[in-house]
Image (tube, rainbow, N blue to C red; front, top):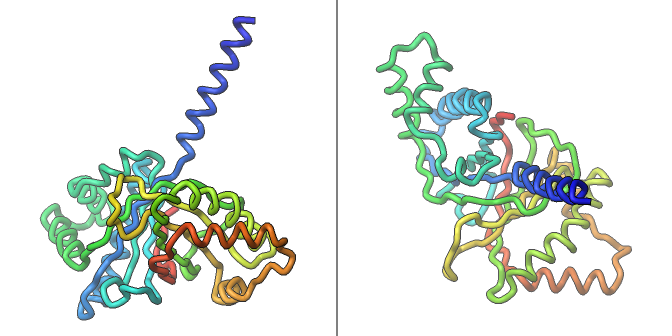
Length: 263
C-alpha cells in the first residue's frame, strides 16, 4: 500500500514537472523604426534570425518571430513586433546578454573579425527602438498543428480585465471563447488561438493585462473568420459570451504578417 502511495505521489509530482515544462513564456517587443531606416531593417532581421537560430540550437529559447504590423492604434510608432519564446520564466526575464548575442553573430558570420562583428551588431541594434515590451505567460491554447511560416497573419489583441472581474474574464476566455475558436479551427476558418496573461505584477494603471493571439494561414481565412457567426448558439451560450465581453476592455488590435521565423 505504501509503495502504491509513493508511486502515486511521484506520478503527480512528475505530471507537475511536465506541466511546468510545457508552459510557454513570451516576450513581445513592439518596435519602432525610423522611416529612413526601414530598408536597413531588412538586414537587421536577417542578422537576428541567424543569431536566434543559434540560441534555439543551444536551447536558450524555444523560438523567435518578427511580424510586420499592418494596422493598430500605434501604427505611427510601431512597425514591427518581435516575439521570443521561452519555456522558463527565469530565462524569459534574463533574456540574452549582448556578449552572448555577439558570440552567436561570430558563428553566423565566421568570415568577419571580432571588431567587425561588434560593429555590425551595434549598428543593427541602433536601427530599432522597443518602447513597449510585454512579458507574458500562456494560460491556454487551441489544439491544432498550425505551421509558422513567412506570410501567415496574426491578430494580437491586447485586453485589460475589468477591475474586480479578473477571474471572471480569464474563466470566460478559457471556458467560453476558446471552444468557439477551436470550432473555427476544426472548420478550417482559423489556424491557432492562444490566451496569455502578463507575467509581471501590474498596477491598476496598466494599459493591458492579457493578450490573445489569433493566427490565420492567409487573408482568405482571416476574412472568413471575421464573417463567421455561430447560428447554433443557445441563449445560454450567447449570455455567457456577452458576460465575457463585459469582463474586459479590448484596448488595441494589431494585425500583422510574419516575416522571419525560427523554430
